[in-house]
Amino acid sequence: MLGTVGAGIIYAALDLISLLFLTNFQLGQWLRGLWDRKALPGAAAGPEEQALERRARDLQKQARKLQEEVDRSGLGADLQPVPAPTVRDLSVSQSKPGRPRKVPEPLREPEPADEGEVIPAREVAAATTADILGKANADSKQLDTESAVAKTEISDRESDITEEKPVEVKAPPEINITGIGSSKKKKRGPSRWLRRR
Image (tube, rainbow, N blue to C red; front, side, top):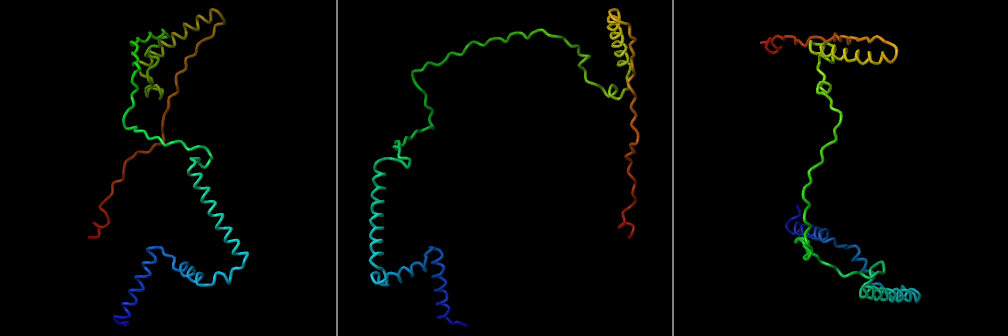
């Protein structure tokens, strides 16, 4: 359709456009700068504009000189002197010679613990299901009678001092759980696809 010459021109144009995008070359700004340089600088600018341009150039020179002085003086942005950089190799441990090592103190044996109230293991024992559900077995009945006897002895002592009050030992209520259905699964026959065949 284009022929070899047209194809060459299109490929050359695509190459130039790709080069412009790769280098981030601002072609529009470059062309405007060339156009402005060709225009007569003295004809468009009046004497006031020329004076302002000279003054701007002088101020830029002074700013450069002041920046160089600050850089040479060694003052930082906060007008404080900049300290000399220090380089330390922290990969090697720095041991300080001349300091004697501390001798570790001999180990002391811990003091014995203070004697306190001794609690028998029966009082600390974990609760069983029978205790929780209220079904007492023979051992727990025996323990209950022993504790009831102990309570009566204590109450007898107290009753000597004060009025006599009878001790009532209530049996824990029995808990029955009802309403839970059985977990039997329904037996199913062969699946539908087997029935069709």
